[in-house]
Length: 239
Image (tube, rainbow, N blue to C red; front, side, top):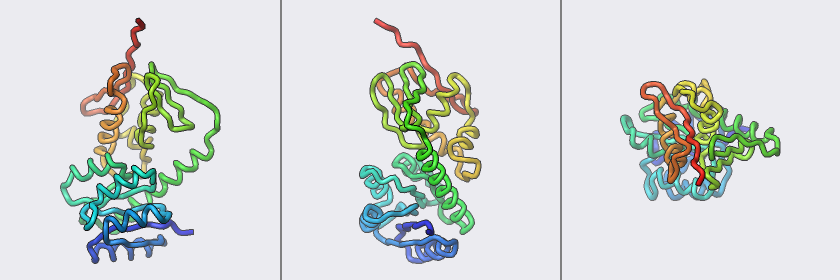
């Protein structure tokens, strides 16, 4: 069966362009031109991918994305942003977007990004289905990671992470004290075919760092300027 893609875009010409080219590539598409309506459709129907514009009537793209994630909808989302709008990209990734496309864009870039996100999603699902049910634990100081369950516990408290944040942390914790370059993280976590920039890595690490370092200092992610990141653990002093 063809992948189903929801396009939430209010500009008629762009909406037709997206729908036509995605359909020509073999995808089944549905177009909605209103933010609130798009949210309802996304929650009521099953899609493999959502292409979401930021500037929408009724409810902007950030609100749509935020409400989707709050309701537990994990459908991959590619946001459409304006040229030189770095803040939009950063905010979109923080809300849970999987990728972004800057307008104006070419058909080849659109199709490449859609294909890459869908491949990553299928790969992630396959890995989860094959994962054993055992309680494998990776420990670094007070940090305990359960790879098969995508769970992280720090100092006895569960830390909620997005899938890519979890994968970044897992890669770092398996190499404690070792500097990992941005390129390495990009290739391992997002794949060699990912065509986004290193800013994606920085945004995810920044979000991950804030979640880990809240009210504790035993596990930290240090930035190595111009290179990448490393995970550092500090022994906890017992009373």
